[in-house]
Image (cartoon, rainbow, N blue to C red; front, side, top):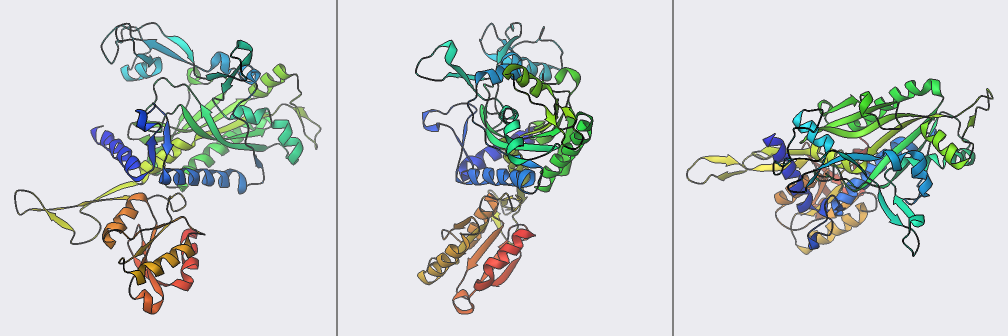
Length: 460
């Protein structure tokens, strides 16, 4: 566990130092469980979103996309069961007054009841558990009154369900089909932590797939396999990804079956994405509350039924964090021969350590770095021309500071797949040296063919 904690510390340090993540409102001391994505972080996050959207929507004909409003009619949350059931049992310490999730204390103690468990902070006696609703409440309009209460959505799924008929009628889709959405959600978590693993403001990537009731099991198994393979395709280590089925007492109020796709974070196997069989629960609830008919009519068989729902629900923040952790690689002694430094107190030599982020090319924040060999004007002028040529097609970085070796390592540390070096020979042969992040192989490429060369490389 010591090594794992150390890894999380290294990821946290890298994220801040290189501009992946910053604590929200840091100059005021920060705010717990809220993070701002920096220049590299927002690129990584957007690349994760694009990868998901391409896989779930653009590469398929049976899934449509929407972007529903964050603020919804409060009756939505009453009908969905969130007002009554979206709670966490909490306990308080009678001595130090700190609050804890009952689930976390039971897991650590290996117990089924809080009785006998002491406060992990001060050893004080704990209160009986009581339910705490996780939704953020606010008011719409100028007057704060009970009639104007409204909630920040705790999930994006309900925006899909209330738009089911609109999407169906406007697209002509036929069951089975799905509706996908990427968007913000908010949960008043009591015990957040582990960087962006559990946040109060986070972004979800969810898809609701509507099926005939008798085909729910078939599509549940299909989507579980598809979604697990997606994480593997984008670079997560196979041995660190597993599935975990929820037992009957662990199921959410809307679910008949639920399976988590889990990743082995430094703090243990935790959920990346959930696959849920929501049956027809949500449609029945909204039909009762709204008075609207949410039945589907099969145009071939004339069969009328309320579709069952198979949901895939993942967190973009968690996915980006998992890809970042899995890509983090330390190379003791460095990757280039002869790079050594004298150890203090004797003649013994030790190798330096290099960090490489082996992100999938499609997820890497910076795709190409343009590096003039020196800061002499004839080289920087040519390098900037090449940067202008490349930046329209690939997110690129121009860097002329420090030795070429240090610049290579800087780009390795943020996961840049290719470095393009402009040297004095470039002025003669109109070619550049392209260095591969993972193999460190270098290849001479004509400037006129550089764009095509890189395009082909990113297709590999």
